[in-house]
Length: 244
Length: 43
Image (cartoon, rainbow over all chains, first blue to last red; front, side, top):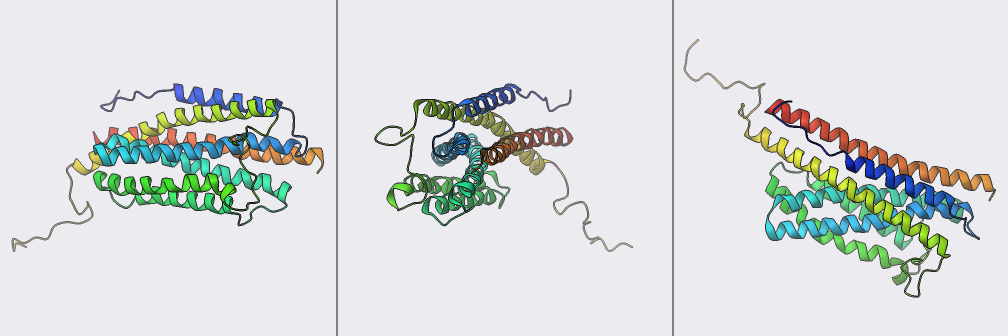
């Protein structure tokens, strides 16, 4: 074993595989919808992906706020880890929505309020990830991204309530409907299993992503403190002694 | 829409979902391995 002791946890991978398998089995065995037929099965991955995007960006906001308060980099790492996973789930939500929209609405994309705001949210959080690459100074990077991480959360309620506030082609909430879920019980149970499975996958993924952030920061600090020529190996200092 | 055609869209959606999850997980695992390697080189 080298100086850098490799003790990495394996259980998150196993948990993810088990949760993913359960979601697949549940969503393939539930009866199809009376109107949409088999296409309704897309909902069991589209809705959990959207929920995870909300949750992940909520955790990013919490991590960012905690960093601004405590100035502890561990909160910044949590915010970053959650933002990266949230971007992945937002992208997944958009693409799965498109796959459902084409056979149902007849188009891949329309400039509907819900769709447009989700796309804007995706690009803002991509910007959050890009912002983190603008400096190698850990504190400055954490401060800049924490401010954006707190401000960007305003998009989550905008996206969620857009179908209520504006006339939208996208359907209104079915599970979080104020008058109760407008679905058959078997579909509600399956959707809850899928949402729980995705949430478990998010938690497991967060463990590994935070481990990665910790290692990346250690590499950065190690590189900055290692002795070496400031201008790089390719540049030699000029000879000012006057010798030949 | 035909019954079989509906299943094609479902297969595409689940293919994309599980591909994205596996690809992102693999990306994290690969970056962890690389970071360990880099730390070994620097220490």
